[in-house]
Image 1 (cartoon, rainbow, N blue to C red):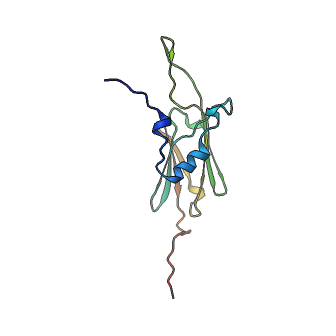
Image 2: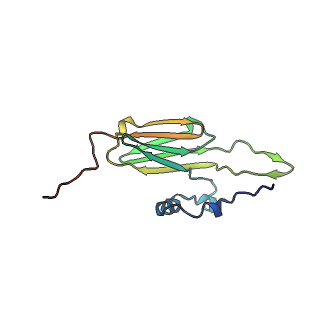
Length: 147
């Protein structure tokens, strides 16, 4: 059996949806392509919805909960932080780093029915979990009867 190195450029190129193409276009780091000396990365985010709330699962392993900054400005929720490079593994003059390090920032536009006073955040097992409860008083969906 032989090991084959995962090539993110080839394997992650095919988007799963058009919105994924747009997200990658606006969120890909210019720093990785030489636009800056500071590195940055874009963490993967899973979004779940049920009748009571939205959940955002931000994949950022290897961080402390104090390294996150979560801002709410009108209808925009921004999650940012920095994963610092702490150590490297050197064996026989070979160096391999596949994890992403540096700063990150993701901004999400919130729907009108979010109760912003009850948003909660928790960091467990490398996943930042944001719970955005829906406000029961603000109903975005309704049916209109034709007369």
